[in-house]
Structure formats: structure tokens, C-alpha cells
Length: 108
Length: 122
Image 1 (cartoon, one colour):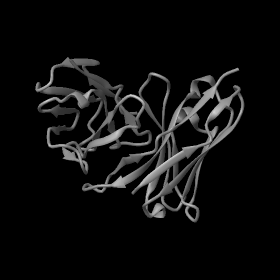
Image 2 (tube, rainbow over the protein chains, first blue to last red):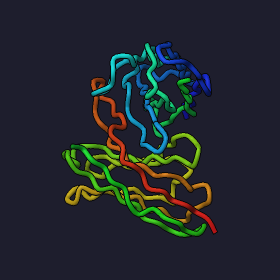
Image 3 (tube, rainbow over the protein chains, first blue to last red):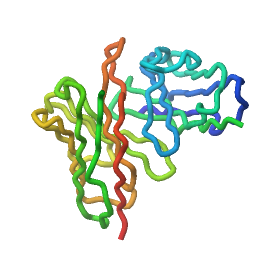
């Protein structure tokens, strides 16, 4: 089973700042990694797929990078509605499909 | 508009059974893999099971193998999860999710339903 480790667990930043979220895989997942955003009381929403491609309707301030075992989700200029929990997910080697434990992003 | 609506959640005693359903609309249901993903209260996401377009392939996370069964009815645009021998640790919101195909040919969860809460408690 591929384990995804996200860091930091919590991130607290101000509007306009840049957020950098990390996801590390226990073995290579090539570029088969996605990022999801989940706001309180809502279902997760796909942000990034294949490591670096934005899903339909996702603002350009969200970007993904990385391949192999190290991945990054960057939010270039934070706005209050970016406050959420962010999860990475792999399906390079499945089953099982696995998720990271999440990073909580707080906007001050 | 693509919509996924789960139902069937509720309170059940340990050892009991529950059947979840997911009604799909706004897309050609029979063309997509479908998944169930769960989230225990205050915890992260855990993939539970998925099923191929024609139902010929099904996969499960180890913790539910032999207890849960995923199925689909393409004529009714419906996805189901039969859950038997339920345990306290199965308590979670259960989401159904479409596995959309994207550039690499890989599948990604998009979109998700709003979820249905399953509580296993005596």
C-alpha cells in the first residue's frame, strides 16, 4: 500500500500570502496524484489531477507540481474562501486507492 | 448538471446491515467507474470500493472485504453498497464519487455526492 504523508498538518496564513502544501509518497506514483479541497460540511472537490492539471472551474491561483514521490500544491494569493482541508490522493498502484491525512489551511 | 445523491444511511447496531444507494443523473452512468469513499467523524478520507462500468470488476479496501458488496444497476443509474457485519469503526459519512477520465487516461474522483451518514453504535 502506498502511504501519502502531508505536511504541515496545519497552516495559518493571511490573505494575499502564498500557501505551499506538501505531499510525499512512500514509493513513486509517477504523476498519478490528485489534490482535493474540502470545506466544512461539504463534499471534497477535485482541484488538481495528474499532479499539475487544474480541474474544470478551478481558479488559476491553484497550481500543482511534482512527480515520483514529492508533490506540492501552491495557492499563489490566498483569499478567505480558500480556508479548507486539502487532501492528496494517488492511484498509481491500486487497490487500495489512498489519500493523505490532510492539511488544514486557516486564513487569518 | 451532474448529480450524485446518496441515501440509506442511519443508525445500526454492531453486527447489523445497511444498504446505501447513490442516484446518478446528468451523465451517461454506464460509461464510468464509480466509487464509494468514507470519512469518519473529524477524520480524513478513505476509499472503500469501486466498480467498473459493466460491473465485471470490483475492488475493496482490505478492512471491508467479505463484509461490503458494491453493485450497480445501469438501467436505473444507481450505485449501491451493501454493508454487512457492521463495526463501530465503520461509522462515517459515505460518499459516492464518479471516476472521471482525464488526460493521462487515469481516473479521478469528480464529482462527489453530498454523502450519507452511517452510525454503528449499540
